[in-house]
Image (cartoon, rainbow, N blue to C red):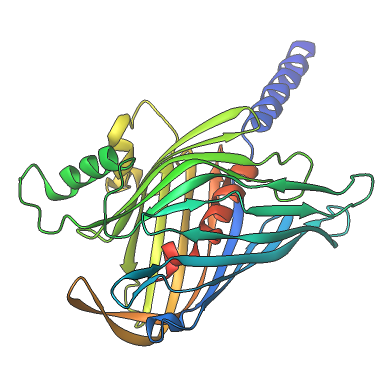
Length: 338
């Protein structure tokens, strides 16, 4: 009897230890409203409101962007985006939201795609015993629409080879690329959230209308290597609605190297398997459609987008998921604009 009792206690201890070692998924809700009149009138400004929320933090970002364009066939006006907003931490005892963060600054996308993040910052308001403080963003990005940047050349080659096969003449080799050059996203206001530094590349392949990503996040002394994709598709059976479906995986024995970029759940046995990494879905309700010309081809695109969804981390801390959501939120033109 004593042996059975001891065995039961040991089993409970092992179960508790296992549960402690496997935290529940971290979920960040994401919403964005995009109003982009520059598609019709380049003298106006695009306006974006992005809302991020989770069990600990709620943040609202407002971004206003001019339209980068060529004037008089000589002078190119760079795309400038002003960033503002605020955030609150959530008291776990009573769910009260306490004002904590203020976002301010701007970034400019130069003619060559170079985008300096160092003019962005976060002011932290004093809460309880935690004093006020200020943290600056750091690093730079290369935002290259319909052009392969130098940093993303290797990723682009891998993507195009996979999506077009080994043929030398792909149907459509056009891509958009984003380089992340040690872009530091400060924490959202909790002392335990030290922020993350992001490096890597994203490639949007027009052949498949999908983002392919190879990213590294350095967060509080830990490194997370995330690879995967985020296809952009029409929502089945719903007119005027599109969606992103994100799958980013951590390194595993099953997915190695470039294969992780194309991680999917096509095999029936793996359709609903949990994957270590970050997954998510963003639904976009599109309206005010306009026809614009891109590279001599006329396309129809929305001037207004109402997006909502969430990102979920499995064996990835909430701070990392939140940082990725913030990165996407600060670049709304890249993911939700034209």
